[in-house]
Amino acid sequence: SLIKIFNPSACDATTISPPSGILNKFVPELRFKIRGLLTSVSVSVSVSSAVTRSLSTNAATTTTDSDSDSETPIGADGRHEVVVEAWREGIYEHDNEPRVKRRDGSYQSIEKLRGFLNYQRNPEPYRPPMERVMDWGELNPPEGHEKEHTGVERKVQAARCMDCGTPFCQTHTGCPVNNLIPEWNNLVYNGQWSEAIDRLHKTNNFPEFTGRVCPAPCEGSCVAGLVDSPVTIKNIEYAIVDRAWRDGLITPRIPNERTGMTVAVVGSGPAGLAAADQLNQKGHKVTVYERADRIGGLLMYGIPNMKLEKETVDRRVNLLKEEGIEFVTNADIGNNVDVNELRSNYDALCLCLGSTKPRDLPVPGRQLKGVHFAMEFLTKNQKRLLLTKEGKLESKWEIDNFITAAGKDVIVIGGGDTGTDCIGTSMRHRCKSVTNFELMPQPPPERALDNPWPQWPRVFGVDYGHAEVQAVFGKDPRVYSVMTKEFIGDEDGNVKALVTQDVEITPKGPKAIQGSEKEWPADLVVLSMGFVS
Image 1: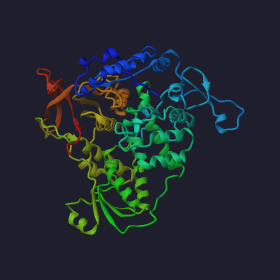
Image 2: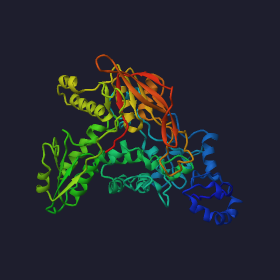
Image 3: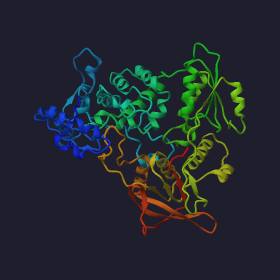
Image 4: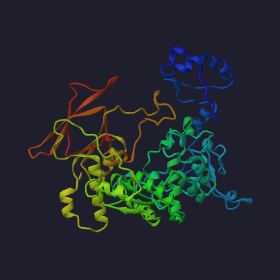
């Protein structure tokens, strides 16, 4: 277990700022109670705004030091090194498992008791940037790919889960749907894959979606992350559900009894599909209405193909159909479908509309052609891909609707996952260049004092789109601490450039620095600044 201890020298009442005044009352008593412990335990600690940032004992220091003082247990193939013996005496299956290299350099059987100390975090990598940027296939390596983790490596990664008494990974600071993460990690470690998908489905209707696109706040609040690197929770979730589909463990669950009650669900995004699934399993008759031409909402059109293959979405939707849920597409409630019709024909109405009003950028030149919202750009691209896959004629539609980045200087305004998706999409269009503007300063490489565990770590990272730009153009696309002042157009009303100003962060918010204007060439500008409602 981890023992959290305040360093008395850092706990002076004058150094603890609001809202932590409640701590002042207990600091003297706390100092007295832990004085004896401090004589035998060496503690490194920092206190900031009423919370300790990171606590590491001698044992924790030894763990991290082992990474630098000894050779890494990860081999040239990107997995923990193993030694396979032809024969080993024993009566259990695991007696003949390969011996796995530990951080101390020894080769021993896989064990979970000290797994997070013995084994190194090793997330399954995406396909190489120069390989994946040439197609619209998923980032994750397919079955049989050289980058795919082996069964042994998956067990090693599951062994790193500490089975914490208080698993922060599944609390409000971690998983939003409270996945039973330590339970299915342990089941994977024991090779009980059927039980693992059962536990995963207890809290998560669609783990094949979250395992691919969720930013994994669970890993940010993993207790192992206090002293080392967090468990590869997202990879394990992905592996459980993909194996379950492959092994035929996910089959239609048709309710034994029907209540006779009817429910209309408006919206077929992740919330609408989850609500429909839950209501249907209770025995109600559920009909889902979607204004687009395909079911899935954000899953179908808002998330690009390389993050979530649309066959994956269709597979789950088809399963829901087999379970008795009806779907109606091209149904825009309030326009071509009267809401009073729904009220009169159903016992209950569930609105799962999502957030579809994007944050705009009201600066001079906003009306120029070539300035688009992120969802407009991504949706039209996905529709074109689907038309191509299905062999439908697209030439007329493409001329009228498609937004292409091919051969253009692209600027994406706004970071986050959606901004990265716009970068990745532009790269697959073969853009001339791509630049990503972010209003805030570049995040630090490690947690700042005001960003303690188990909060989401606001640290610098490289997402898939950034890595692809780096691989192709040789530099990171992000430019920090800038804001757009105006768009500049040509004589035909097309955007050709934009002007930015550097920004400084003040107590009242971002403030433009006068005289720092800079002009950037831009044939396509994508606004990815979140949603307002």
